[in-house]
Image (cartoon, rainbow, N blue to C red):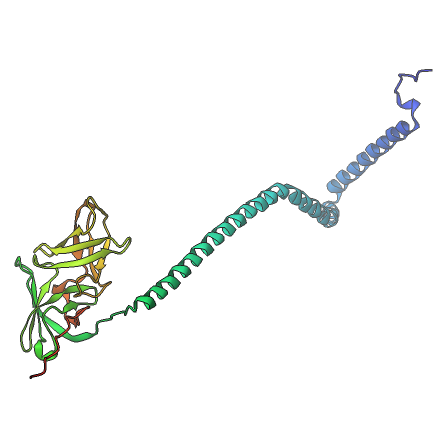
Length: 290
């Protein structure tokens, strides 16, 4: 026999109990509300004390529920942060591996360099200073650019020796007297210094213009680009100037020939240092008399 389609509560004891319990809760709630309303109207201090007591009891419960809610809400962001940290960790590991490869390559190149130097028996030259002297004067208005030192042959100064200041190269000794020497400045039209660019080693020539500035020309390539701020130092080619002495900085972008300003400004210097030539010419040995 098919079950009846009547779903009224009277046909289920559980449904009857549920309905009865709902009525009881509703009546109890109405009574409690009426009592609280009467208490708040008739005795406000007692109602305030009761409210504070209820708040003390329910605050920890509400705090716990709120903490649980925040924890559940933070699950997506925590998962996203975890994924982001894993990606960043993978990137850092890759960078570390790349840097390790570069370090190993640098060590290999350094080792090969030491072996080649030992094989060729190369010697690092560091020209010693001859004398520190005062710059007495310098020509700033003439097309020829010279300076005078108050030290000469009696102090060991010789023709061709480089002269530098704290900021960089000044020039070279052109003539010497007993206690004075004439310096050919970098900006003189007769001055040509072999240099190289620090960022890529480009070989070039720094030639004086006669107006206090230099022209930088490539020594090996055509149509070379120069950028503002390019720094040029001595290359050591020619044997007069030791390598890596600051010479000039390019002023503006150019092709083939760039305008540059020297680091050392003779008219602002008090002292200069005269150095030995990087590769001094050997003095021929005297032949014994027959």
